[in-house]
Every structure is written in C-alpha cells, then in structure tokens.
Amino acid sequence: MNIDNTQAQMRKGILEFCILNILLTKEAYPSEILEQLKNAKLIVVEGTLYPLLTRLKNAELLSYRWEESTGGPPRKYYSITPQGLNSLAALQTTWDELVTAVNSLKK
Amino acid sequence: MKKTISIHLGKQQFVIEEDAYLRLNNYLTTLESSFNNEAGTIEIMEDIEMRCAELLCLQTANGQHVITLKEVDEAIVSLGHPEEINEATSADNTTEKMYNSQQSEGVNQPKRLFRDVENGSIAGVCTGLANYLAIDPVIVKIIFVLLLFLGFGGLTYIILWIVVPNAKTPADKLKMKGKAVTVDAIKEEIENAANRFEKSAHSFARKVDQKGSEISNRFENIGLVLGKLFGIMFIFFSFIWLLSFTLLLSGNIEVIPITGDFHYTSLKSLLALALPVSQTFQLYWAAIWLIGLGAPFFFITLGIRMLLGNSKKLISFALLLFTGAVIVGIILAIIGGVQIARDFSVVTEIENKQITTHVDSLYLEELPSFSDNKKIITTKEIDFIQIENKRIVEEGVNFSYRNSSDSLFHVHQIYTAHGATRGNAIRRASVINHPFEIKGIKLLISPFYSYPMTNGFRSHNVEIIIEVPTNKKLFINNIAVESTTTSHGMIYAGKPINHWVVGGTDDK
Image (tube, rainbow over all chains, first blue to last red; front, side, top):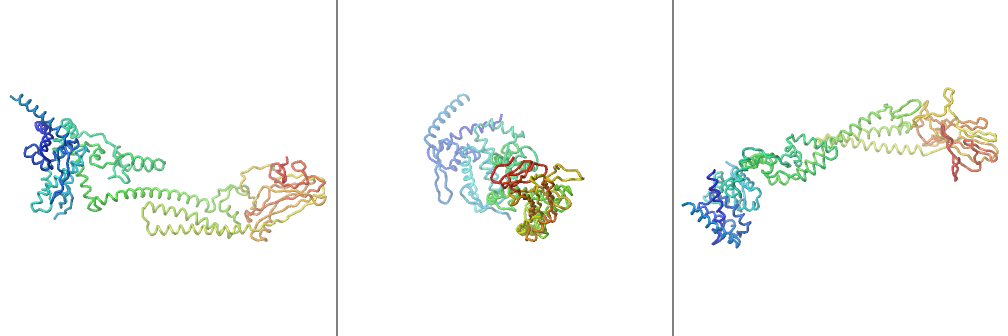
C-alpha cells in the first residue's frame, strides 16, 4: 500500500472544500487562492488548483468575473455562488462528522 | 549567442530563448493532452497559462529581459508536472493508477484507424491504412492506383477521406500506432513532433504559413497524381495508335479483303482507288501521314510532360511541332476534299450500243458468266470489292422500259461516269465494259460491269433502256409486263430480277 497515494487521496478529498471556504468571505483571483493554500500546506504543485477551479465553476458552485488591472494583465476574480454555499454547508457537516469519528477512534 | 522567439502567453508578451520555448511548449501541450478532453480543458489551460505568465513575469522583474530554460524549468516545478497534477485531481485515483501501470508495462493497445496527414501525400488515407494493416504505404498507394483504373478506386478514397479521422493530437497518433496513451508516451510523441518541426522549420515557412499552404498542397498533390496517371494513359494509347497506324498504312500490309486478282489489298491501294487523280491522292496521303503521326506523337509528348511534371523548352517545341503537323494535315485534307468534289462535278451519259430486234416478244434474263466454259450460277463471296485483271467489277445494272415509237424493240446501253471535265467524264464512261446481247427472243444482260482500276470510284453506272412496241410484250421473270407503263428495275446476279412500277405497287 502506497502511503503517498493515500496522503494524496486525503488531501484531494478536502481541497475543493477548502477552496469553497477561502471564497466564503470574499472573492479572490487564482494567485491569491494559491497563496492561502500554499501557506496551509495543502497544495504542493500549483497546477492542481486550476482543474479544480474549473470543475467547481462548471458545477456552478463558483462563478468568476474579469477585472482589468493597471500595469498588468486582466484577472479572473472567483466568487462563491448560492449553490456553492449550500454545498459548502453540506461539506462542513461531513467534515465535522469525520473529525468526530476519527477522534473517537483514535483514543 | 542564442536565437529568441517572441511569444504571447496569458495575455502578456515575452521574449524567450528558442530551446526554452520548445520546453515550455512541450510542457503545455503534454499538460493539455493529459486532461484528455475533459470538459473545460480550454479554461483550465487558460488559467494555467496565466499563472505561468505570472511566474515568468516575477522572474523578469529582476531586470532580466529574456526567458531562459532556467526560468521555464522553475515555473514547471512550481506548476507541477502533468502526472502530479493528475494524481492530485483525478476523479477516481485507484482505478486510474491500475490502468496507467498496466499501460506503462508496455502492453500495446489495439491499433485504431486514423488518417496520417503529416506523412501522407494527398490526404493520408493510404498511409493511415498502411499503418493500421502494418504494410508498406507504397504498396497501399499502388493498390489504390490500380483500383482507380478499375473504376471504384477514386470513390473509395474519397469516402475514406471523409469518414476516417485525421490523427492530429499526440494522443491520436499514439492510438494510431497502437501504443499506450500514457503521459510519458505523450511527452515522447511531442518531443518527436518538436524535433520534426524544428528540422522543417529551418528550411521552410513557420507553422502559421504552413497551415495556410497545407490545403493548397493537398490539391497540388492530387493534381500531380492525376497528371501522372493521364500522362501514362496518353503515352500508352498513343503508342498503340502509332503502331497500328504505321502497320496499316505504311503501304503494303494487306488487310482489306477483296475478291478477284488478289485476296487482300492494302489501305494505300484502296485509297488510290478512291482518289484516282494522282495529285489528290498525294495530298491525302500526305495528310493522313501528318495527322496519323502528328497526333499520337503529340499525345506522347503531352504524356511525357505530365509525367515529368514540368516542361522543358524541347517538350514545348515538340508539342508545337506536332500540333502544326496535324493542322497542316487537316488543311491538306480539306484541299483534297475540294479537289474530289471537283472531280465529281461533271457527269455524262453516253450511249455505248444500241440493238434493235423485230421479234414479237422479248424475254429479259440475266446473262450468265462462264469460267472454263462452265456456266456459273452464283458465286457468293465476301461482297466487298471485286477486282479482276486490274479492272474494278461492280454488280447491279439498272434497266427501264417504256413505249417504243415504232413497232420494233430498241435496247439502249447507257454508260454513266463522273469527272472534273466533260472530256474526263466521257473518257471514263467509254472504257466501261458491260456485256449484253439479244439471242433470239432473249435479251441477256450481265449483272456485272467493269472499268479500269485507274479510273477510281467515280460513280460509274450502266443502264439499259428497253423500248417496247405497243402491240408486243416484254417478259420479266417470265411474266409479261404492261408496256404502257414506264417502270424500272435492277438486275443482280443469281436472283430474280427486281422491278417496280412507277406510281404503282410492285409487280409479282
């Protein structure tokens, strides 16, 4: 059994949850999201973020808008949708349940 | 010193070294393929490219103006290799891992049929097919050309062209060759493609240019192939024409069946018969040769030109020469035609002989021919041209009858011939030979008449006119005919005499 694999599996499961959490309070563009995930050590390679962002957007949990910036290229600002909020709440519940479950097993 | 390229990435412009560009391009293409046409791949790539541009921008902010391999590699490390990204984001990790390991063990997938436009000559149909079947592409092309001659090759090719997809992406190309579509394999494929591109890019136009001329190249290729096919056909058929023409006409191959002196005669002699005037004959002879040789040579030269694909001065000159020959030949033929018409312009009839008899009835019969003192009833031979003793023999003598002005039978033998002048025509007419005689109550008329070969075919004719006194009878086929009516008929060898009444029904 591959430890790396399992670790990756674990991280993968919660990445989307984390992204939604980041965007809960305010909108952000990909680099900002990346920074926060990196600081939380959840992401190792940046490339992992983008497919997830697009998937969430296609599932209509996120939306984005373009903003022109002076002295640089335009940026995509992602924000969470009402549907996204619902999913986030559901995930939050699951997360809490998991934490409780694992903690109770750990002893 | 290194070559640099100017690129546009993530809405920003960069100047990048050539090898760094290739590495970056390689990376981005592999990455894109690895998403395997997942919905939103374009957007994902957009975002990734923007991030990539950001990373590169940060590095050039240090005052550096050109992106080198170092920066590209650092950016790739940051962004992550395709396997790492896929591992972290794929929907079902375990099954994909199993699938991948199986493939990377080198188990080859079954090949799928694609067209290989990159390697093919027109639309890659033959090359793709050859790939799929593991045969040499040249053999497949030969087969298609043969099928083209059989008739359905062209249609088959076009159908395959429409239906079979083109192997565009690296993933397609791998499927075409039957290799496993793993990220490693894709990378390898892209590197190969990059190498091929690099080689051709040095000597030919850039990618953008290539795309544009690709289409016209295809058409050019089709044109070339068709041209070569036609070239071969032209040469082949012209050669056959030339061969048969030379044999037939070069004078003495005797293929026309005639009876009499010879059994066959050559086309040249036949022509001489039709054109007795030597000047006309020569004109036509020259015309025939000019056209008969000029035309096939023209086509042979044309065929050679189509095969070679270009035209040297010599070839163009030869084409002109042969066209000229054909035109001159046609002109000669026209002149000759005019002359022939002139030769028919005058027609004369002369009365060669007249016999009178005072018998009460006259029986019209065929004059039999004798050979070795034996009577010939009929001789049926191939009824084309008869030549005996250098005289042309024709069958079929007209006769007609009408009332006589007195009480005697008068039988006139009239010869007719055509000529350019009156004297000419008269001369031709007078040398006709036609035997007829009255023996007792029988009027014997030979169905044959002859005239010298040198006269040519000039509508010679023989007619017998019988004047019948009112109180006497003329018997045709042993049946008496009404002497008050005018009527005519023809005598042929070995048959009952045909005759018909003017303005009435046939007699029995």
